[in-house]
Structures are given as C-alpha cells and as structure tokens.
Length: 226
Image 1 (cartoon, rainbow, N blue to C red):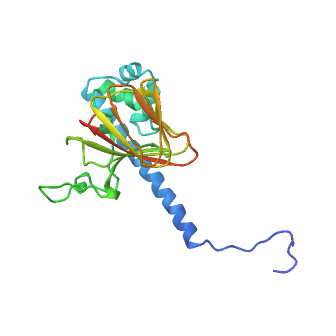
Image 2 (cartoon, rainbow, N blue to C red; image 1 turned 60 degrees about the vertical axis):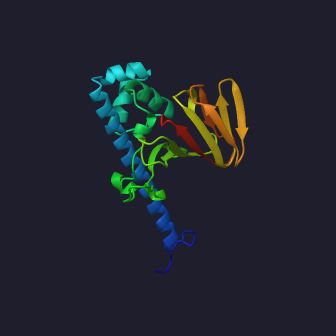
Image 3 (tube, rainbow, N blue to C red; image 1 turned 90 degrees about the vertical axis):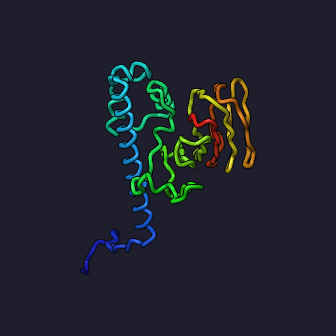
C-alpha cells in the first residue's frame, strides 16, 4: 500500500523459535510454582484440621493474620520461610513435611525398583520453592531415613530464614557455589565455594547470601529434622 506514513514501520518481525521456547519455559515454571503452592496449602489445611485447630487459632499461635493463613491454605499466596517455620512448630511437624514433588512426577517414581538402594533423579526432587529467589530441594527420598540431604539455592540478597531457628540434631553445610554467610549463636562465618561448616542445630542459626551472585548450599541433617 503506497502513500503510508514513513514514520511508522508496519513490518512484522517473525518470532524466533528460541524466544518462544523461553516464554513457554517461563510459563511452565510459573505453573509449577502455582501447583506446589496449592499442594502446600492443602497439606497445611489437612494437618491443621487433624490437630483440631481453627485458622484463627493457627494464626494467633504463629503471630500472623487469619486472612494470611486462609490465603496460604487456598494456595493464593506462599508464606515466608519464617511463617512456614512457625506453622511447622505449631503443627508439630518438621518443615520437610511441606516439600512437594514435581506436579508431573508421581511421588512413588522417585524410588528405584531395588531393595538395596533408592534413587532420586534430578528432575524428581521434592521442592519447597516459597519464592523464585529461595528454593529448597530434598535430595533424600523422604524424611524416613537416618539423614536428610537438602540442596538450597540462594539468589543475591536472599536469607533463609530471617530469624534464627533451631531444630534437633547436627547439621553440616557445604557451599557448592558462591559465597554464604552463616550466623550460629552470636558468631558469623563467611564461607566460600568448597568450604564446609558443622553446627549443633540446637543453637539458633540462619544463612544468607550477601553477595551479588547466586549461591548453592548442600545441607546434611541428622536425624532428619528440617
């Protein structure tokens, strides 16, 4: 069509295949988080009902609003790690109870058909992804063994949890990538890639990534109590 305004470019740029794939992957990740959030809410609701607690009583004990508990149970929002710790303590369960399998992976598929070994594939790890910047992945099949292994990814500036926490047993953490700050009691330890720290989990502790790069930690906890 002639006589068009030369200031406007009406040509259509074709969408590159790699751009389309990236968009679909983003949608898949978002859908996965939504599914895990709904599963988390359903688990909390079931445990709360089993304890005979109302949402009001659970909220009061955890120091949060009733509306927040209601939104969490309906899968509308994800609780912070600190709130989830409070919920776990109130319901008298380890926080590992809330790890969720991938929606596309049946829970029993994480176990190999063997009497002598259990295999958890990388794409079958149970996850606790409260936010996109702090993700926990359970490397062990469940909490029924003598040790619990967790893969934790901290984006820059992320801490988990904000308030120090305690749990039974002993914990060892090795930094796989990046730099991590660990607060144990009144002491601060800064670890680099390859460094490892062992702590008495009964001492209040927390961890954070204060660098400008992502960090990855593997934590071993015995007995399983996270």
